[in-house]
Length: 289
Image (cartoon, rainbow, N blue to C red; front, side, top):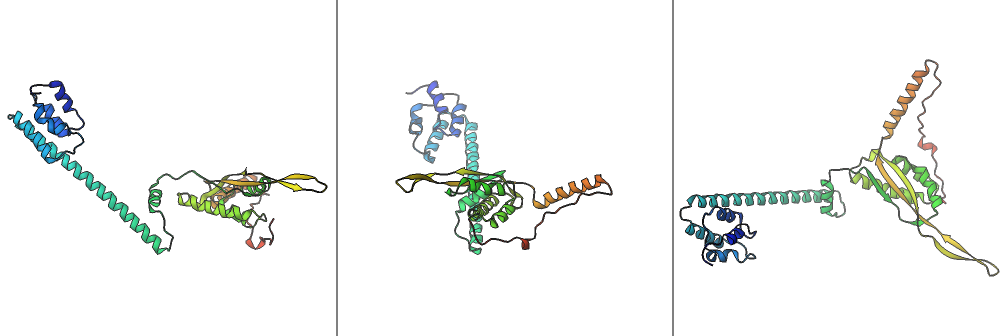
């Protein structure tokens, strides 16, 4: 295979197994290099490029082109630039790994000082790196034994209320399912706060009830008769979003009431109601149904 093979030489120049430095050198060469002398350097793509292979290719290029001293200088400069880029990438990788280790050590120290349980620190770091705060947060209870009609009464009670007001209503409700809903709502509030939402502005945007399984059972009657009874189950879905705080809503209400009084003139009959109920007036019953 001695002689000039321009088409094979061009394929070697653009082969992905050849480094960029030698692609540039091959493209700068004006006359073809003997392919048999370069064969050991290129015919084994799976083998890693070693210093001996690169030096042999470089020596072959210089022997075939003794007058091209500027090309060898270009090769050296290209090799130096590639080495500098690789060193910079290694420095960046080491810096990132050191920063991650520092964050993990700080998080572990804080958790141990607070006496907290072990946490998955990778998930914690991902959570801290989130920049976008979700607009809504949805969660639900598990299906439990209750009629959807009775659960709908509690849904209508707390719908469109702030989270703290809804928790207070469920705390003093006489419904048996109120305690379960209260614990679920408190847990959902904590999860939404962990995602970056403001706990003071959280309110219930939507509260809905879903039906669960209806288990059929035989109801034995007298005189050989029987009936079918249904054991119902249901679940409740919550959607939290950020809205106005209680203080902001009171300011808007007072501003509207004062504007109404100002329009009525000196003999105004409109009164401003605060709608605040003292906690001493609230009594909790000792039975639940």
